[in-house]
Length: 367
Image (cartoon, rainbow, N blue to C red; front, top):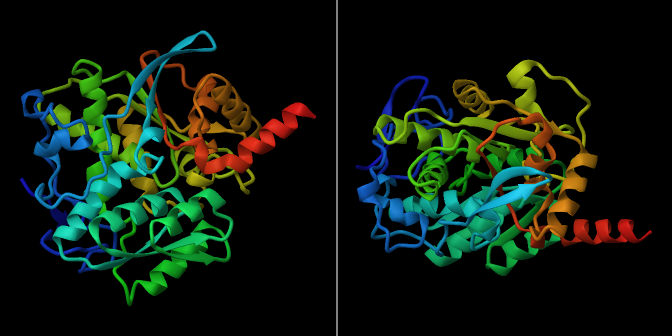
C-alpha cells in the first residue's frame, strides 16, 4: 500500500507520485495517510537492513536508495546499577539515526523524479542526505550553521554536496533555506513526512528484537522530534494491526539550555542558551505540538539535562565503551528523571562527529 500526502488541518489528500514539502492548499505541514502496520510473517528476514519491513514502508521498493541502514544492535547494559537497553543508532552508515529517515525519504524523492535538492541541518541530517543523494545520483545543496561541528561539515563536503555555511543559529539556517526553496526543491527532513515514514521503523525493530513485544518505555534525545514521532507512528501501527496491546511511554529528552518541547509540554521556563548537544538545538521545533501530543498520549515525559550532566554522561559512556556525540548522552544524563523499568535508550550519533568535545574532556581530566 502506497501512502498519500494529507493536510491534517483541512483533510485534503494528494497522491505521492510527486514530491511535496508543504501542503498545496495552505503551505502548512504535511502528513501521510495512516499505515496499516506489520505482521511478523511479513518481515523479510534475509534482509539485514530496515528494509526487512518493506511491507509497511510505503514507497516503491524497486527504486530504493539504501546503504545498508537499520537493524542496529540492542544492547543490554548495567548502567550504574540499573538494567537498561541501549539502541545503538550511532552505528548507522553515516554515523547517526538520521539514515533511518533518509533512506525512505530519498527513495521517495528519487521515485518522484527529484534531480536536485536543498536541505538545512545542524549537521547529522545534512551528512546523511549528502551521502544518500550521492548514492541516488541527486545533486544536493546542504545549509548548516557556521558553528556546526567541523567533522559534520567535512562529511557533507566529502560526499560531494554543495556545503553552504550560514551565519547565526539553527533557526537562521532554516530561514535561509526557506528563502532558497523558491528555486530548488526543499528536502527538509523536518517537513518531508516520508522522513518519519523511515524513522517509524525504529518501533518495528525494537518490537522484533524484543521477541515481538513493545518495551515499557523508550527515551530519546529530542530536538525536532523525528525519533519520538517515528516511534509513535510505528507503535500505533503495530497496535492497530493487533501486534501489541499497549504503547510504550515515550520520553522526549532535551538539554535544559534548549528546551522548547518541555515548555510546550508543561510551561517549563528556564534561561535558554547554547548547548553542547548541537544535534537537538532548535528554538522552534516545527512539529513541536505533535511531539507533545505523542508524549502525552503514551503517558511519557519531557525530562531535561544540564550541560554539566550531559558532559559527565558523555565521558562515562566513553569510558564504558560507547563513543558518542553529546546529543546521544542527553538521555543518559536525564536517567534520574526516568524511573521506568524495561527502558530503551536511543543512542543517536557517533563520537566521531564530536572529536573536539572529547579532546576537551580529555584535557580537562588531565589538568
